[in-house]
Image: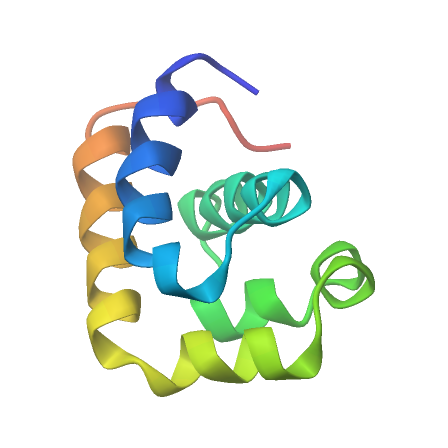
Length: 89
C-alpha cells in the first residue's frame, strides 16, 4: 500500500482503540480505506471476502452501528484522496 495510507490508518485506528485494533485489523482497515477510495460504500467494503475472513461479525457490526466511525472514515478518505486518481484497478 502507498505510504500515504499510513497517516490515514493511524487516524482511523485511533477511532478503534476501544475495539482492540491489532495487526490484522490494521490491514483490514487499510483494505477498507482502499475499497472506499475506489468507490465502494463502507457496507460494500465490509462484505468483501478479505474483510469477512479476517474479522468477526461483531467487529463488522460495531463499525456499522457507530455513525461517528463511518463519518470519520469517509471524511479521512476524502481528505487523503482529493485530486488523486489511478490507485484503483
